Image (cartoon, rainbow, N blue to C red; front, side, top):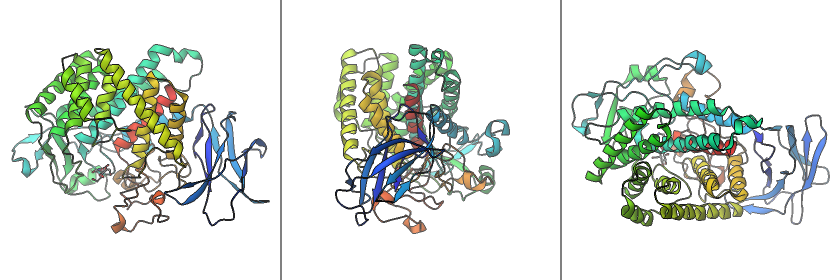
Length: 548
Ligand code: 9MR
C-alpha cells in the first residue's frame, strides 16, 4: 500500500510517497493517516500526518500523500503508515544518500554499452555479461524491395531494444538525447568548477569520457549508413524475428539485411550529426567536421526527396513508420542553423508555426529537438528568446498537469514505452530549468523519476538491477539467453501500457484498470521490453539531476 522510490532519495530531494487503498477498504471518509520514518535500528526519526485523500482515475485507488522532504539525514530508512488504531503498513528499507543519482546515471548509461552490436564485450569490461563479437554486419545485402545488388558495411551501433534490429529513426532520437546530456555535462564542468568543491559525487571527466565514447559508437554506425548520394538507409535487421537466442546463434541461424532509405531516416541522421559537430568539435575537430559534412549532404538529399516513405516490411523488424516530415525537417534545419549560421531564418519561422512543441521527444514527433536547438543557439537572439519562452510555457503546463495527477505525472495516457514519455517530460523540465531556473521544474522532474524507480501503481522499480523490485524477466533476447541469472543492469522497461498489445501471448496483468498494465514477464513485449529511446531520456534526466 506504500508507494515510494525503491532505490531512495538524495538528501536534498523532495521526498513524497503515497498510501493507496481500494475505495471499499476500511479507510473511510475523514480518516487522515499519520506516518513515521524509521531508521535501521528501529528508532523513529520523523513523524507527520498525511494529506487528505484524493482519487486516482487510472487505478480507482484512494490516495494519500506523505511528505518527508524536511528529513535529510543519510542512511537506510523505511516508511511506516498507521492505517487504524493499531494497524500499520510499511515500505521496505530504502536509502537516503548523495550518490544515489550518480550510481543510477552510470548504470543507465552503461546499459548502452551492453546494447552494442558487432563487437566483443570483453570480460574485463562487461564482467559476467561478456560476450563474443557477432552480428558484424560488415558485408550485408539489401532487401529485395530495394532492387539493389552488392553488399554494404553497416557495422556497429546499438541494438534498438530486446530485438536485434538497428534503426536510424530511433537511434537518431536516442543519440540526440544523449548529445543533449553531453552538452550540459560540458557546460557544468566549465561553469561551476564543481569538481573542486569537495562534494565529489560523480567523477565528471570520466563520466564525460564514457558518455562521448558511447555516443561515438552509435555515430560511427550512423556514418556507415549514409549512401553515396547522401540519403541514409532506414534499418538493419534479421530476415525473420530471432528467437530468444544470443547474437552468435542468431548469426548461425539467419542472414541480416539493410532495408529502405527514407526522408525520416535521412533527416534524423542530419539532425543528430549536426549536433554531434557541436559536441565533438573541441575533442576531435576532424571527426566533428566529418559529422557536419555528412549532415549537410543528408539534409540536401532530403530537400530533393521530401516525402520518401519508410520500408513497410516488418518481418523481422519493427516499423517506426512515420509519414509526417515537418518535424524532422525542423529538427535538422534548426541544428544545422545552430552549427553553420546559414540562413534558414524564414523557413524556421514557418517550421515553428507548423510544429508546436510537445511535452517531450518521441521517435515519431521530433520537433522538440528543433525548439531546443533554437533555444540553445546564439546567432539569432529573437528566435532564441521565442524558443525559450515557448518551451517554458510547455514546462509550466507539464507542472500544472503533474500537480493534478495522483502519482505526479503529466502524461494522460499510458502508451507503449510510457516510462520513456515520463523521462522525456522530466528532461524537458530540466532543460528549461537550465535557462529559466525554477525549483518547481526540478522538483516536479525528480518526482517523475520517483515513479520510474518505484512510486507507481504496480510497486515496481522499472530499471534492471536498481532495486529489489527491478524487472527480472525483461523482454530482451540477450538477457534470456546469456546464461546469467541477473538481467543486464541499467535497462528501463517500457512500463505501464494501457493498450496491452500482447494479450495474445497471455501475460498476467495484475488488474484490469489502465494503471495496472505492466507485468514482469518475458512474453509482455508491450510492457516489459526495453528500448534505447526510453533509456536515453532517463540517462539525460539523471545527468541533469546530478549536475544541475
Ligand atoms: O516504441 C515503439 C512504439 O512506439 C510502437 O507503438 C511499437 C509498435 O510499432 O514499436 C515500438 O518500437 C519497437 C520497435 O518497433 C522494434 N524494436 C523494439 C521497439 C520497442 O518495443
